[in-house]
Image (cartoon, rainbow, N blue to C red; front, top):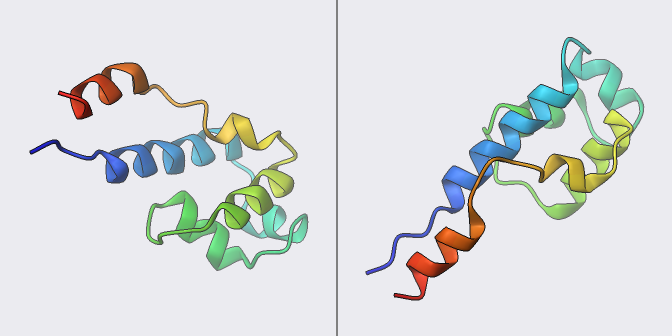
Length: 85
C-alpha cells in the first residue's frame, strides 16, 4: 500500500511559517489578520489541522504571498511517482 505523506508535508508548512515569522511575536501577526494569536501559534507549531483560509490569513499577517508558505523542501514529483507505483 502506498504511504501518504500529508503529515510530513503539513509539518514542513508549519516549519516554513516559523521560518518566515522569525522573531516576530504571534500577537503581532494576529493583529494584522483575522486570526487569534493562539490560532497562528497552533498552526506554526503544527498543533492543529488547519483550513486553507487559515493559511491565507497567516500569509496576510506575515505580509507574504500565500505561495511562500508552500515553498517547502519536498520532492512532490518523487512522492507522486511513489504513490502511482
